[in-house]
Image 1: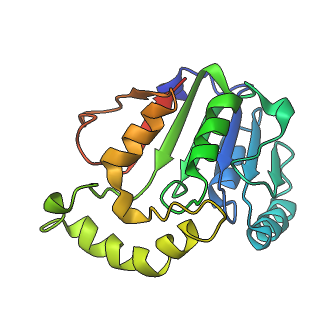
Image 2 (image 1 turned 180 degrees about the vertical axis):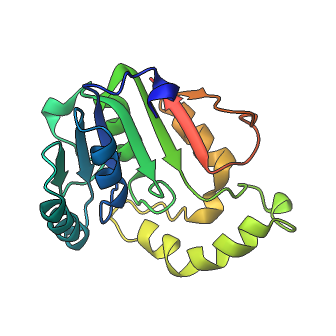
Length: 195
């Protein structure tokens, strides 16, 4: 992560938006003990589990909060150097609000990364795609119901796909960043962006 963003590994602030049980935030907090790590999730049960795990680990650089990604604290503007959205966007029912808030709380030189299943947005590309055959049936029973569950449920699920997810991120004024050998037009699980 620090090689991607040019961080020295000291004094950066990271937000794991939609952290669930907090598995990744604990790993990051251990790896970067001088940094401030925040994990948020709207699911209280997930946050209770994450807080219990945090108590076992005894880490002082990690905070968990039960919050909606579409309604972050007002004093968080331009607070984070890096934001992770791992398996969040295709499951969320408030994607527009999440991306607006992500842009607001990301520092002007900050980076974000959204990870979602590597499936195309276009049915013609799905016929012989192993990942689509794996993820689309699961999405019917997990991702779609979640993404329809809120007041503004868009109902994206996995079928929303890489191309439309990428376009939505760009529409919110976040610039895409090429990482590694993959062309930005290649369907992939990761979309790295900056302000």
